[in-house]
Length: 121
Image 1 (tube, rainbow, N blue to C red):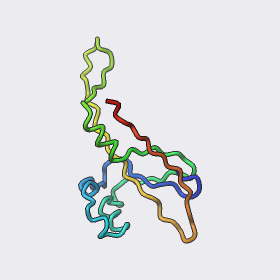
Image 2 (cartoon, rainbow, N blue to C red):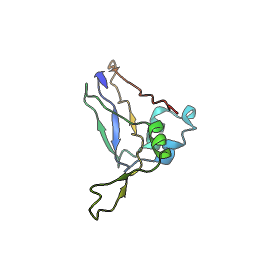
Image 3 (spheres, rainbow, N blue to C red):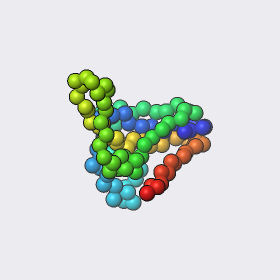
Image 4 (cartoon, rainbow, N blue to C red):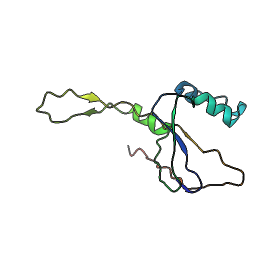
């Protein structure tokens, strides 16, 4: 959450994303931030939005997506007495997001929190 200054930018949906590039970021030290952003997101096709200043944003990262994919598949069920087919819940994907471009002398104050879930087994 940006307490002061512009909020983060995030991509809605999968159009314009290059998830294969996102998952193979071994070249991070060899490329600039701008080059990495261009590699991961086709800005001419992607639906990019920006959170307003002060708005809380909940973003699920790659670790949450990987954990969800390791869990057994759950099913959505309405009423057991109807003839409704059970539909698998689609896998959750990490939210692609980045800090906004800042103008000279513009800054941000951010509040971030990570939720750590420990296995109790």
